[in-house]
Image 1 (cartoon, rainbow, N blue to C red):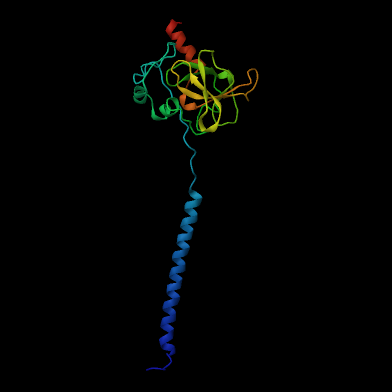
Image 2: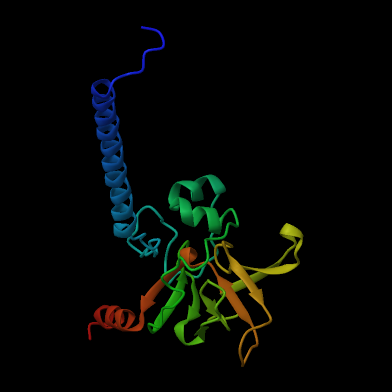
Length: 212
């Protein structure tokens, strides 16, 4: 009836129902929070994989690759696109730049020779490599005067000296005048366009070829 106050018997079931519902919501919320905390604590982001490129004279996909042939390479851009892996093509033929600190060669201290990953041309000896902290493999001197060629790079509003392979004219990186003695130069090279051969492996191949 209008104006009639609800009795205790009517209110008590309602209170019990509300209390039970609140406990249920609290319980579910606690479970969700604990699940979120556990998921956050158990997630460990992995470091980006460092890629290396290794080609050899038997690579049929790249007929111009050779560590012994020093003759100039003249290949069309269309052919390079078919021959080279996408990441190598981007840097070597489109003058791209790999992300810093992603090359396995940056901190490598192994003894050997660094070649052009595009054509196999010898570029740098490992004893000219140094830690520059720039995020890319750095060298203070090329293996010979003919292994590297230079060109002016005025892109992105900067004036820099571009470094290219002396055999296939692929983009390698840039050279700066803030390197260590004796040259005072820093050849900042994209690791993706480098192919490394350990000195021991090279010696073994040579001895097998000579029948020693």
